[in-house]
Amino acid sequence: MPISPNQGSTGGGTIVTITGTNLGGATAVRFGTKTATITANTPTSVTVISPSGSGTVPVTVTTPGGTSNPLSFFYVGAPFKSSISPVTGVTAGGNTVTINGTGLSTATSVSFGGVTATPTVVNDGQLTVAVPAGTGPGPVSVSVTTAGGTNNGLSYTYVDAPTVTSLNPDSGPTSGGTVVTITGTNLSSTQSVTFDGTPAPFTVISDTTVSVVTPPGAAGAVDVTVTTTGGAATAAGGFTYLAGPGI
Picture 1: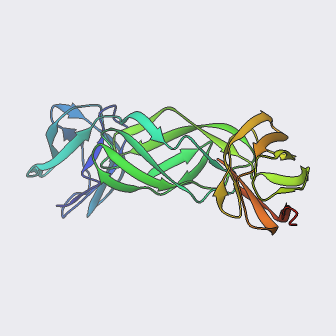
Picture 2 (picture 1 turned 180 degrees about the horizontal axis):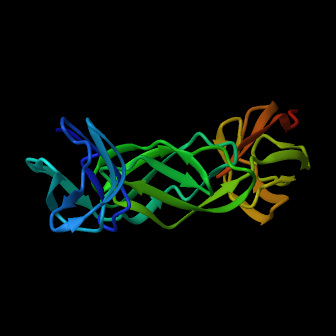
């Protein structure tokens, strides 16, 4: 006489179906000492709503013909989430985050501001999940749903991808040291600025402005890439290194 699912929240409320024979006219289904609410009954199945409980309890079905053999049902506590990493990412989604906590082994979904994704369970204390696309930039609540229930409490922030509109000045000596103002959008979370792949020291002035000092480079036009938590933007050939005079 199988029982499905065979686990559910300690708070009760899990819809459980028990299948077998001679189950018609069921008068009671008990989870341990507690009686469940019967919602459907046929000669081969009984569907009930589990009562609250804890641990592992025997489940029995009582009909006018007697009481069945017991089946085991496992009560699972609500999950607890302790951390999420990283806490920010692109609005388009797709990056993978790790959630740590307890009671995560039965996780079936993770919600980011109401948009759900299917996680990969690593163990009872950790899961990973690909972040779904957000509706726009900004923080959203993160909840994990398991057989034990749903737990909130974490936050994830969507960040729009950056853009680069101009560099001023857009040229300087190959020796480097030129202070350049980069103008664009969504630059406040800038993590790096590179000139032809070479990292440059920078200072974030505002969400639209970053000040950077050019590293040394070879003569010619090079790509300038700004990387933020929201992605990367490249000004192709955005800065030109000028060779010094020779006599």
